[in-house]
Image (cartoon, rainbow, N blue to C red; front, side, top):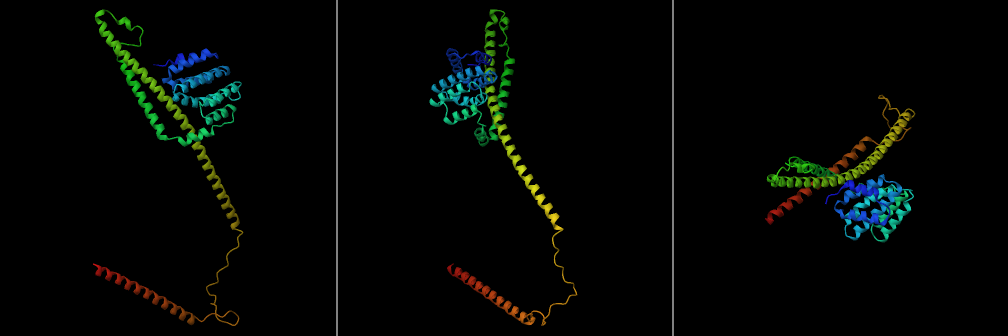
Length: 334
């Protein structure tokens, strides 16, 4: 069953706070529950435009629809309404209807319509204390670019399908959208052919309507994903700005330290000067410390080197002998 959006907008605009009016429109919405996403979207648009008193009526209407949907086992509508309830509640901050809306929250909590976490979030929005930090964190954690790309492709495909079906409708022999189509029925002999052409045109028209409804739902999902992607990338940009600012501050500190080092370099003491090339070498004398005899030092060094070479040779011979023994053993095994 198709949804007449203009009719729904009129019904939402004129609904009153009486029980009969709210229940009547609630039954009408549940009768068209297959279009729940579009209905909820239109409800929120009307809520956004409405005055304070009528907003309360629309909230009561949402309460009736949600509770009936919960009892009749249609959780999709209940869950989809939750996101729009957050947006609607945020519009009622410090409003005179906030106390009445809070009573609706109490009913939902008592009857287990929504979780305690969601009710607390809605109350935070109603009081103006919540800043959507939890919602933003959830969006950032769950956002996937691949899902957004898939929805864009799906929307493009849906648009092409609608265009194709609309072209088929235009090419029909009979214009089923015209109120003067029956004037083309000239006589009884052409009646059967006209009936077949009209049936074909009607089927094409129904196909176009169904395709456009699917396209509207697809576009709504895409818009929701784009809004979430905007939140995600704004958050990422803020984090990137924080990192950039940190590096800028670090760079400024490094430059400041470098400048101070350059300023203090001129005041640092100079290193001790090297002795001139023609300065005499130190020798033994009665006035200074006694230096060791060079020939004794050389003899000790040579003895140490010979000992090191001898030990190394032994190690090499031992390693070679051990290797020969292992090779011999392997040959005997074979």
